[in-house]
Picture 1: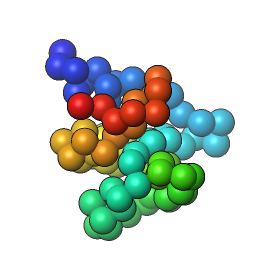
Picture 2: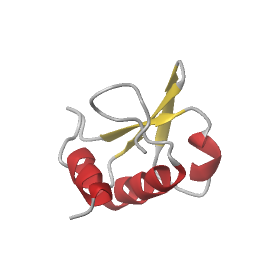
Picture 3: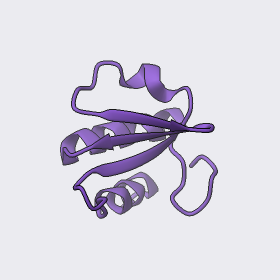
Picture 4: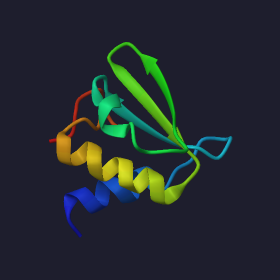
Length: 81
């Protein structure tokens, strides 16, 4: 299993109490997500929280963010390389 697959599996293994997958990303990623429906964006400082109830949409977003280095680590406030 590649590191990308491990990261995706980790994010997809948890949902918030309302059933959303929450994906933290670096501010500026919004233009990468314009063609994706079924998402909500919330900004907090330099972080954008992407919320979706769809597992396949969350996986698609994670792959885009990892490829472009916009994904924040769950363990600290830095981007994943």
